[in-house]
Amino acid sequence: MTLEILLEDVAKSYRMNGVSLPVLDGVSLQVEEKEFVSLIGPSGCGKSTLFNIICGLTEPDRGRVLLGGRAGVRAGEAVSYMPQKDLLLPWRTVLDNVVLARRATREDSRAVKKEAMELMPLFGLSGFENSYPAELSGGMRQRAALMRTVLARRRVLLLDEPFGALDAITRNRMQQWLLQVWDNFRQAVLFVTHDIDEAIFLADRVYVLTPRPARVCLHLNIDLPRPRQVEMVTTERFLALKKQIMRALQYGAG
Amino acid sequence: MLRNKLMAPLGFILAFLLTWEAGVRLTGIQPWLLPAPGRVAVTLWDMLPLLARHSQNTLLAAAAGLLAAVLVALALAALMDFSPWVRQGIYPLLVISQTVPIISVAPLFMIWFGLGILPKVVVVALVCFFPVAVSMVEGMEAADPDMVNLLRVMGFSRWQIIRLVRFPAAMPSFFAGLKIAGTYAVMGAVIGEWLGARSGLGVFMTRATHAYQLDRVFAAIVIISLVSLLIYALIEFFARLAMPWYFNERGND
Image (cartoon, rainbow over all chains, first blue to last red; front, side):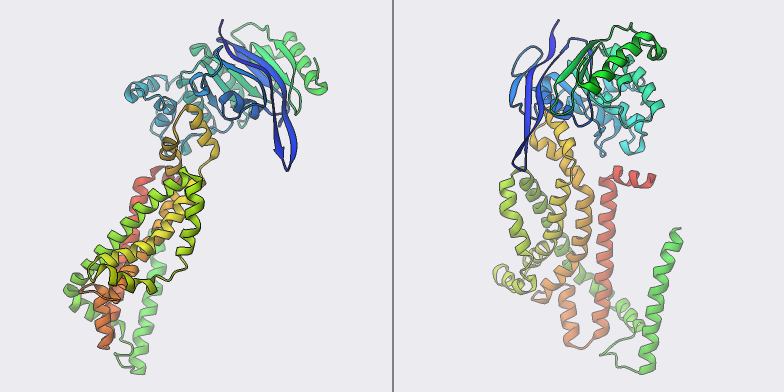
C-alpha cells in the first residue's frame, strides 16, 4: 500500500490586523492508495486552508506533508484538485476544458481529446463537447469539472464540497454516479463535505474536524459493504455511524 | 424588433434635419454661416471623389495609430501583470500622461517627424492608447483568483496562465475600451492633419473653413462620422469573432 497523502501535525495561523488567528492546530490524517476518505467539519473550520496546504499553495507553519510517500513531490504531479466552484474556463468549450490539466504536461492533445471523447458518455456530457460552460446546467458543469479532475490522471483526487451547490435530488444522483466513476478509475479520493450522510455514504473512512482551530476529533472506519445502495442510509449500522459523527461535531470528541 | 430599434433613432435624426432645413430657409441665414442639410448633401455628392481621396490618408493614419496603440497596450498590460514592480512604476505614468493635452504637444511631432503620415499615427496612438491599456489591465485583474490558483496547481507557468486565463478574462473589458478608442481614432487623425499635412480630411476641412465653405466642412464631418461608425461596427464584429462564448452566454439570459 502506498500512502498517497500523509499529514503529520500540520498547523497554520494567519495574521489578521496584527492578531494571530490559528486555523489548523496539528492536523494529522492519511489517505491510502485507492481509498475514498471523507473529511467533515463545521463550515469555516479551515478545510480550505488544509486543501491549499496539500496543493502546495500555502506553506504550513509546522508539520509534515508527504505526497506519494515522499517529501518534496510537487503537488500538481500527485494530486488533482476540484474546487467548490466548478471554475470551468468560460471561453473554452467543454472538451477544451476537460483536457486542460493535460495541457500542462505537454501531451499530444489529439490523443488526450480522443480519450476525453470516449469518456463523455460516462460523465453524461455526450453531445455537449462543443458547448460553452454557460450553456450547461449546474449538474452538468459539476460533472464537467469532475471529468477535468479525473482526466488529469493523478493518483489522488481532492474534491472540495463538489455537490454543495446542488439541490438534494441532483445531489443524491451525483453521489451514486461519483462512486461509479471512482470504481472505474480507482484513484484515491479526499472528499470534503458538510453533509454527514454524504460523508458516510461515499467513504471508506471519515475524519471529523473540530471548529477552528481545526484538529481531528474523530476517525471512523465505514464498514458498510460496497457497492453502496441508497437504502443503506436507513440501516441501523448507518444510523449508528451517523450518531457518532453528530456527537463528535457537537461535542468535539468521539 | 430590429425595425423598432432602428425606427426611433432614424425618426429623431429625420426630425432634426427637417427642423434645421426649415430653420435655415425661414430665417434666410447665409450659407457661409450655416448651410442647410440639403445643400450639404449636394456638396457631399459633388465632392465625393475628392473626399474619398482625402479620406484614404486619414483612415490609414487612424487604423495604423489604433493598431499601434493596441499592440503596445497589450504588451504593456501583460508586462504589468507579470511584474508588480513594473506595474507600480508605470501605472501612475499612464494616468499622468493623460493630463498632458495632446493638442498642445502635437505640433512637436510635426517638428520631430515632419509633415508625412508618421506624426498623425503618433497622435492617434497616443489618444487611443490610454482607454485600451486601462481596460486591458483592469480586465486582467478581474480574472478569478481561484481559477488562477487552479491552473497553478495543474502546473502551468505564469505566462501560460496569462494566456489561458488572464487575457481571455480581460477580453470583454478590452473590447469595451477598444470601442472608445476606435471612435477617438479618426478624430485624432484629423487633429493631427489640422496642424500640418499635404492631404487628408483635416486638410480638406482647414481649407474649406478658411474659404468659408461651411457646406464642405459639414460634408467632411458627415464622412468622419460615417468612418467612425464603420470602425465601431468593425470592432463589434471582431468582438463577436473573438468571444463567441461571451455572446452565447448573454443570448441565453
